[in-house]
Image (cartoon, rainbow, N blue to C red; front, side, top):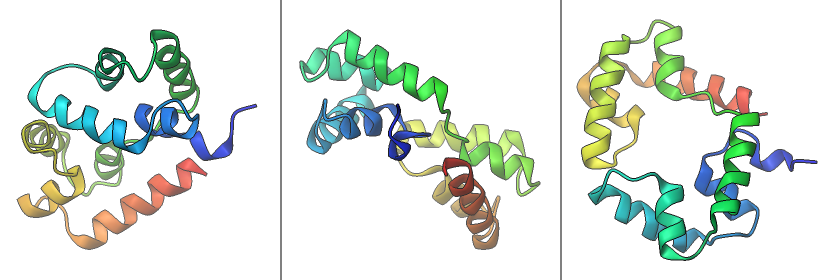
Length: 126
């Protein structure tokens, strides 16, 4: 039985919740990821804090309970366009900033749009 607290989580959060890696391990891996184009699971394996089997198990959980992406929700509710989300994602790759903040700073959405989308995202995680 999967713990309800790991449904819809990112890979790193799943691995933390399962006790495989620590929050500090995730923070270090995210720092490494900013400089390379590798996936977080690959980085954690190279760091020696997770095994390929650990990552595969977490990916299976993640696939079973996918996260509803904030950008997709914002497009679905008509708050912004897919092109704006795609552009914001490119900025996110460079800066590591959260997608909602980038879209706000771009003027693509407002605080009400972001709040509404985050509420929908939270409902989907429950």
